[in-house]
Amino acid sequence: MEQFNTLLKAAEYAVTRCGSFRFATSDEKYDRKSLMAIAEVSDAENPADEDSFYVVSPGGAIGFCEDGEDIDWLFLTNSSIDEDLPTALQTASQIKFCPKCGSGVIPSARFCGACGAALQGLKRFSIHD
Image 1 (cartoon, rainbow, N blue to C red):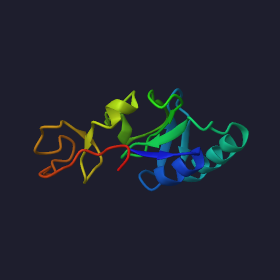
Image 2 (cartoon, helix red, strand yellow):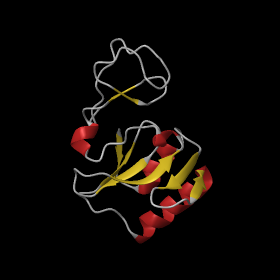
Image 3 (cartoon, helix red, strand yellow):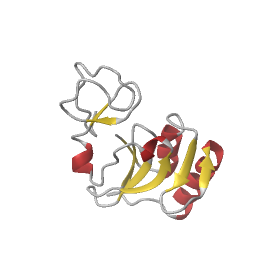
Protein backbone atom coordinates (compact mmCIF):
# COMPACT_ATOMS: atom_id res chain seq x y z
CA MET A 1 0.00 0.00 0.00
CA GLU A 2 1.55 3.28 -1.12
CA GLN A 3 1.02 6.68 0.57
CA PHE A 4 0.84 10.10 -1.12
CA ASN A 5 0.47 13.69 0.08
CA THR A 6 -1.86 14.74 -2.75
CA LEU A 7 -4.71 13.12 -4.63
CA LEU A 8 -2.96 13.95 -7.90
CA LYS A 9 0.15 11.98 -6.90
CA ALA A 10 -2.06 9.09 -5.76
CA ALA A 11 -3.98 9.19 -9.05
CA GLU A 12 -0.74 9.27 -11.07
CA TYR A 13 0.30 6.07 -9.32
CA ALA A 14 -3.16 4.45 -9.46
CA VAL A 15 -3.44 4.83 -13.24
CA THR A 16 -0.33 2.67 -13.59
CA ARG A 17 -2.34 -0.09 -11.87
CA CYS A 18 -5.72 0.28 -13.59
CA GLY A 19 -7.40 2.15 -16.45
CA SER A 20 -10.91 2.68 -15.15
CA PHE A 21 -12.29 3.80 -11.83
CA ARG A 22 -15.63 4.44 -10.17
CA PHE A 23 -16.46 6.68 -7.25
CA ALA A 24 -16.96 4.56 -4.13
CA THR A 25 -20.38 5.96 -3.22
CA SER A 26 -21.94 6.17 -6.69
CA ASP A 27 -21.88 4.58 -10.12
CA GLU A 28 -19.94 7.45 -11.70
CA LYS A 29 -17.12 6.05 -13.82
CA TYR A 30 -13.81 7.67 -14.65
CA ASP A 31 -11.08 6.87 -17.11
CA ARG A 32 -7.44 7.80 -16.52
CA LYS A 33 -7.77 11.28 -17.98
CA SER A 34 -10.92 12.21 -16.04
CA LEU A 35 -9.48 10.83 -12.77
CA MET A 36 -6.38 12.98 -13.19
CA ALA A 37 -8.52 16.08 -13.88
CA ILE A 38 -10.68 15.47 -10.79
CA ALA A 39 -7.57 14.92 -8.65
CA GLU A 40 -6.00 18.18 -9.83
CA VAL A 41 -9.15 20.19 -9.07
CA SER A 42 -9.62 18.47 -5.71
CA ASP A 43 -6.07 19.27 -4.61
CA ALA A 44 -6.49 22.92 -5.62
CA GLU A 45 -9.86 23.33 -3.87
CA ASN A 46 -9.43 21.07 -0.85
CA PRO A 47 -5.79 20.17 -0.09
CA ALA A 48 -5.13 17.52 2.54
CA ASP A 49 -3.78 18.80 5.85
CA GLU A 50 -0.38 17.69 7.12
CA ASP A 51 -1.81 14.79 9.18
CA SER A 52 -3.73 13.36 6.21
CA PHE A 53 -2.66 11.40 3.16
CA TYR A 54 -3.94 9.25 0.32
CA VAL A 55 -3.27 5.55 -0.12
CA VAL A 56 -3.35 3.39 -3.23
CA SER A 57 -4.03 -0.33 -3.04
CA PRO A 58 -2.08 -2.82 -5.18
CA GLY A 59 -5.11 -3.00 -7.49
CA GLY A 60 -5.29 0.79 -7.92
CA ALA A 61 -8.09 1.78 -5.53
CA ILE A 62 -7.54 5.20 -3.94
CA GLY A 63 -8.38 5.94 -0.31
CA PHE A 64 -8.01 8.89 2.03
CA CYS A 65 -6.59 8.54 5.52
CA GLU A 66 -7.51 11.62 7.55
CA ASP A 67 -6.52 10.50 11.03
CA GLY A 68 -3.59 8.27 10.16
CA GLU A 69 -5.64 5.17 10.92
CA ASP A 70 -9.04 4.85 9.21
CA ILE A 71 -9.16 4.61 5.40
CA ASP A 72 -12.08 6.12 3.49
CA TRP A 73 -11.99 4.52 0.01
CA LEU A 74 -12.78 7.15 -2.62
CA PHE A 75 -12.13 5.57 -6.02
CA LEU A 76 -12.52 1.87 -6.68
CA THR A 77 -11.41 -0.20 -9.65
CA ASN A 78 -13.01 -3.21 -11.28
CA SER A 79 -10.33 -5.35 -9.61
CA SER A 80 -10.92 -3.76 -6.19
CA ILE A 81 -14.36 -5.38 -6.12
CA ASP A 82 -12.51 -8.65 -5.47
CA GLU A 83 -9.72 -6.96 -3.50
CA ASP A 84 -9.98 -7.08 0.28
CA LEU A 85 -9.62 -3.35 0.96
CA PRO A 86 -8.70 -2.64 4.58
CA THR A 87 -10.69 -0.11 6.58
CA ALA A 88 -7.74 0.83 8.79
CA LEU A 89 -4.09 1.48 8.11
CA GLN A 90 -3.04 -0.93 10.88
CA THR A 91 -4.88 -3.72 9.08
CA ALA A 92 -3.34 -2.68 5.77
CA SER A 93 0.19 -3.09 7.10
CA GLN A 94 -0.52 -6.74 7.95
CA ILE A 95 -1.94 -7.75 4.56
CA LYS A 96 0.09 -9.79 2.10
CA PHE A 97 -0.41 -9.25 -1.61
CA CYS A 98 0.13 -11.49 -4.61
CA PRO A 99 3.12 -10.22 -6.60
CA LYS A 100 1.46 -11.30 -9.86
CA CYS A 101 -2.09 -9.90 -9.65
CA GLY A 102 -2.03 -7.66 -6.53
CA SER A 103 -4.89 -9.44 -4.76
CA GLY A 104 -4.81 -9.74 -0.99
CA VAL A 105 -3.87 -13.23 0.13
CA ILE A 106 -4.28 -15.22 3.31
CA PRO A 107 -1.02 -14.97 5.30
CA SER A 108 -0.49 -18.75 5.42
CA ALA A 109 -1.49 -19.37 1.77
CA ARG A 110 0.98 -21.02 -0.58
CA PHE A 111 -0.94 -19.95 -3.71
CA CYS A 112 -2.98 -16.87 -4.64
CA GLY A 113 -6.72 -17.54 -4.52
CA ALA A 114 -7.34 -15.11 -7.39
CA CYS A 115 -4.75 -16.09 -10.01
CA GLY A 116 -3.09 -19.24 -8.62
CA ALA A 117 0.44 -17.83 -8.52
CA ALA A 118 2.87 -19.47 -6.08
CA LEU A 119 3.46 -17.36 -2.97
CA GLN A 120 6.68 -18.95 -1.73
CA GLY A 121 8.91 -16.48 0.07
CA LEU A 122 6.27 -13.76 -0.12
CA LYS A 123 7.01 -11.03 2.40
CA ARG A 124 4.51 -8.90 4.25
CA PHE A 125 4.23 -5.51 2.68
CA SER A 126 4.32 -2.66 5.13
CA ILE A 127 2.97 0.78 4.41
CA HIS A 128 6.55 1.93 4.95
CA ASP A 129 8.16 -0.41 2.35
